[in-house]
Length: 106
Image (cartoon, helix red, strand yellow):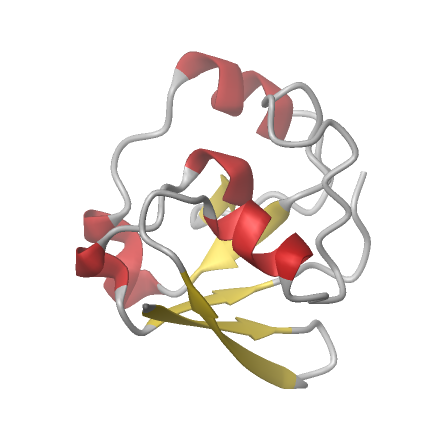
């Protein structure tokens, strides 16, 4: 199992164990992590699983694809480290990953 820590906008931390092969979004939804709405169910057609990836993990999560880029462009809270959790596959390399959720999902 892979450990992922989700930090809510108010600083509340929740660490969960995720199965390799799932996504950071699916792991959050499966474990009842607040702040990940996942309205489209992981098909990269909304931005309601927006997260801010801690800087030290950015090089390990892979490149952003054009569809994800388009969805994130709709978010007024977007930052340089913004990603959609549905587009981050859970792998062994991500054990210890830390992401923060924005105050609102759009």
